[in-house]
Image (cartoon, rainbow, N blue to C red; front, side):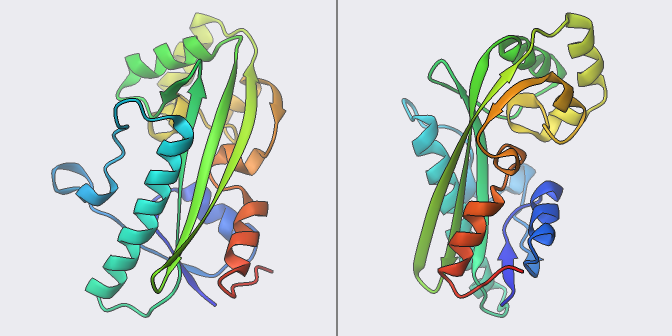
Length: 201
């Protein structure tokens, strides 16, 4: 069974390929014409756990509405959302290079949680799972933070880093799922897809 992936993330595409899931990509509008249904602005007082679930479910359900609107072949819609949490605060994607440097400076020498929620919607039914990992960064020097930000790698990633890229050398300890920190926990995702009759591999 094919599915739709409601994400622009090349990392999520790569991970679905890795576990043998055939998929088509659903693209949401961005910028000034972005879809309000998938606005990623945290709500006042919203916890990271509630935030990732709300966004992942919204993306899957909005993706399904686009399948109907565009008269596409009905297939399950998979979506995911990843965010960081440290000291009870949500850390999303950096807005610019200065913000990226500030985020990485906060993470330096500390442990943070990476939460990735995955949702699948098909014919009125939504299933959801949450993966939580703990990541500890070693102490980072200001110069290496600056050099890393200059590569551009942090700019589209929650927490301003990609563990599968150059920031892998910042990670002193990981407890949890490496692929979950990348943005799609493959173990939980495979189990979720099985509930819809899609058996990876």
